[in-house]
Length: 493
Image 1 (cartoon, rainbow, N blue to C red):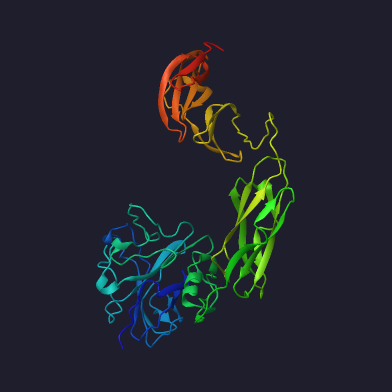
Image 2 (image 1 turned 45 degrees about the horizontal axis):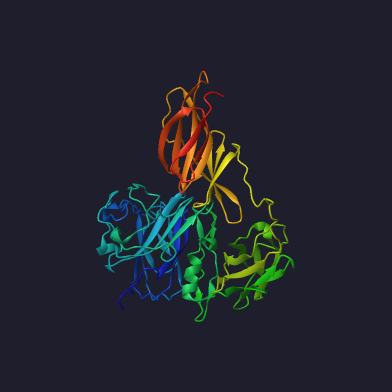
């Protein structure tokens, strides 16, 4: 019988070890006929769109199915140091993938195209920069990158010239493209990059559900570097399998501050869960802040054998006139035994019971700057506030609830004379233009020099121009039509 033709994603790596000895475990999601050959290499793809950037001097190994292998089978390969031969718990293996780096590496799975010779390299030459040999290597089926940080590099132009880091293969690789989350996986984090394996469910799921579980790093755990063995327990597919789908519901979609409404927020699974399962719940929305409500917990737990779990959302009766607010409750981050369903969010309209007092200012927000703050100027077009803050001009974003967040700062935009200091004294805004008055002071004598006024785009802080003005410009303001700036020059302090 002819070898089985595989497509990307038909196999996946489910474990790896780097040392004593090196090894890996893979699973097939498709029945394999005898004679099917899979190749494995830790070579890196070093430059996007460049077929000749494979590191062909790296190791490779080829596994051959001796008999028919059913879908769901997990095969464990072991690569001791030479002269001890490589071994497999099913089929045979030639070559060795020893030398996997415990500090970071990658493993690619490919299908041998020739189907006969298991000892030829998938690369044109054993060189640090070479091409993928399609006659031997065939197309890539799966890739895994293990690193303390980062994982596969998704984009760039620099040639990495590295054994332990790799770009994610693209259409220009000569070996086919892989996609993170579908045919490629990153395993990152200290303590797991050297030796790790899939630790999620191994029965009761559909093939596609198992693939999703394996491609989730949260379902991987570290393996002991000395004594830990890679788990060879096969996957058992369920024809109708799949994780219970969890949807979100609320007991009411309207609430009021006056009633301090308490709403039950419920996560409901499509079937009873195995083991305690959790989702994260959070609140965002329009015109709402964390002071407008309380959540009894940030996690909803569905107990083992149950289908529902709940928390409470309670409206806080504050004294701020806010108008009607909308809270958007959302669930995310499902644990390994459940999946998110089609309804993951619910909206709640909250009626305010406060009236703004006529002629009285009411504080709705604030910001404390380490540099101090004076002479604020607000731009309504960009919702930005500009303040003189010590030796700089700080930019604050203003939300529709009055919350202030630091968005950046302005630089003078001009080069002062040597031996002088530049001090911002005042700021004004008109029609999307920011004007800042800068005093220029002799750093030794403190004598005033010719001052400057700089202009900026309020929306993004881009410097536009700077003009000379008098000594010690202290205050400035735009004319009503915004075409001129009036500057008060004190001369000397």
